[in-house]
Image (tube, rainbow, N blue to C red; front, top):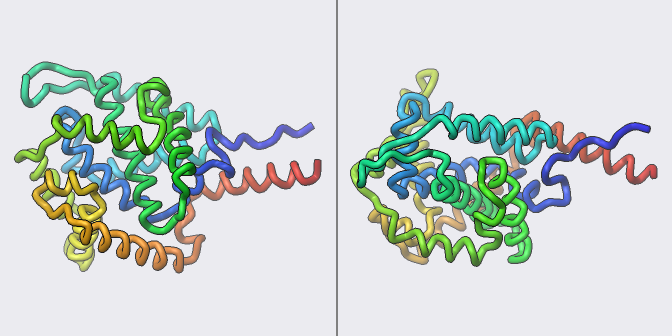
Amino acid sequence: MTAEPDLGLFGPQSVTWRVHAEPILWFAGYRALLLQSLHPRALAGVLQNSNFREDPWGRLWRTARFYGEVVFGDTPMATRAGRRVRAIHARLGGIDPDTQEPFRVDEAELLRWIWVTATESFVHTAQRSGLGLSPAEIDRYYDEQREVAVLVGLDRDDVPADAASVEDYYRSMQPALRVDSAVREVARFLAMPTFPWGLGWTPIRPLWIGVSAFAFSLLPPWARRLYGLPGLPTTDLAATLGTRTLRTAIRAIPTSALEGPLYKEAMARAKSTAKASSAG
């Protein structure tokens, strides 16, 4: 008897697969970086342990690879991805910019902040683009993503399990967040990063400035205000309209140009499982 394909941690019936099938999530990654930078220790951990300024695209690619393997890979692949990230974090530490005390990158507080900002950015951007999730489905997405929290070294109960808990968490964290010279420098770099292959001398640069402005508009109002930007409802409306327009434009591109190998393999496994179930 042939074993059914391993659909991984989530599978085709999950909200996670619906959310992460959206190519517009590349903008969610940028939004998450802007949020993560507001936490002094989180930013110090990045700046003190990585070549972020020299290779921003490598860091972006490694993060995208992690989520691709965890979301669409089979269970062994997701497990290996989590083990790889935990091993990297276990070796890293930093110096708190305020107290000058040493800290570990894999402290629960920092891992929780990174997880929440990434998870919330993914579902927020997908929903704002017109994905059309119900409140119950959004809560289900957060609950499903606790599997990712476990992979990076957290307990399931260490992270919010629904949208209301995420909002409560953000409110509790806001007094500890700030924009200082280090944050502003990172924000400027994200707006005008180094580009590979000489692309910085092409129209890519002015286009990227527009991408950066769009990413800032996707931030929650309280985060925009921290950055010294308007936190007005009209900004939210413009971001929503822009996101939906972009999603429509992206969906007009042939799917073969957007679907990566991990996604295609996951769809093939799901199709094979569905066929086996029908035959049974």
